[in-house]
Length: 476
Image 1 (cartoon, rainbow, N blue to C red):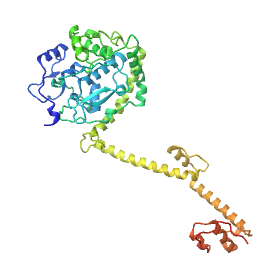
Image 2: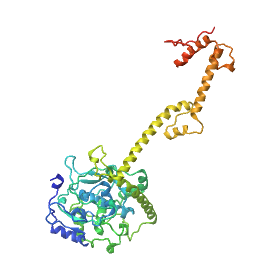
Image 3: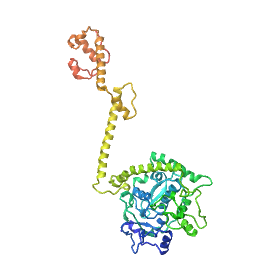
Image 4: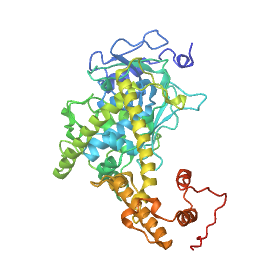
């Protein structure tokens, strides 16, 4: 039996737990949950996924919110591989976006705040709850006050209904307890410059929410808010939380909880003890049906929605390519599963090959043009970019012909200078006839000029010497 299988045992959900779920409203919808019977290893029915009691308490509820679906797809994870604290992080993020920022949760803002890490050492890593979602080290974020120790949550597993979608990336991967958690490049994905620019106002607002004197917002207040209003952030809802309509809201799971039950629930998902005071309200009034979004923020929301849609379109292909990627890895952690004969990856491979050839060709072309530049443009400074360098050679005149003409001009001038230096009377109309010149003087001048071509010397009847004199021959 694989090590991953040994983590599972018979579910320990008690009658008390089932009564709690009923009180919280999870059993109100028929067949939303199913409980294991005697099995010691999960065997979910078709259209069900494996989850945990603490997942539900931390904000999860079927049908599952599209943001969590997308997150699981991009990171290549199954639902049971997320710890309850990670589920709570996503719940708080969605509540923050919808109730306090007035925007839909979006991938660009998420990447600026969170990252994904393995839970456990390299030699001993969990599969159940093997992934930890954490705040990036350089980001100032809310102190969520997670429980100091979460024990036994892995033993209380159950099945939640998955509503299938026509889109692969919107479906949660069917349960596979033996599937290893493989690191993806997407775990380290950072926001692009355009995404940073688009979300800068939101990051500034988050900072203000944390640091406005007398109105400092705490992570535990956000948690307490969604537990109090009885709307699960990680449920696919009919309305965003900024449209929350109070007791008559269509997305509420249950009626208001008694104060003692609510406080007990908040302590269960936090590090607050019985001596600590439970926050009764947020110091900032959340957006809702009675506190609607201001008009400028609604316009900003529409602009961000357009960005999100653009990101979805741009990211759709990236996700499909990542899904299809073959094992072309430098490290085992980056290995991905991929069906053989994948047409998409075959096309991608051809594009990559041609791209490499094109890049190599450009490098060679740049090196060649750089060497030629000083010959063609001796008085100009060589450009720094390949594009500018290529434009210098992309002119209407024939640069090769121009260079040859310059060379011929220099050669003619040199020849005339040599002949003039010989003090001979030359009939320039017959300058092409070597017989009209005094052969000895001509040969002497040629030796002094050190022509490199042996055929020329042979034609002139000269024998090259090992070390010809560099001095000018005496002219008699």
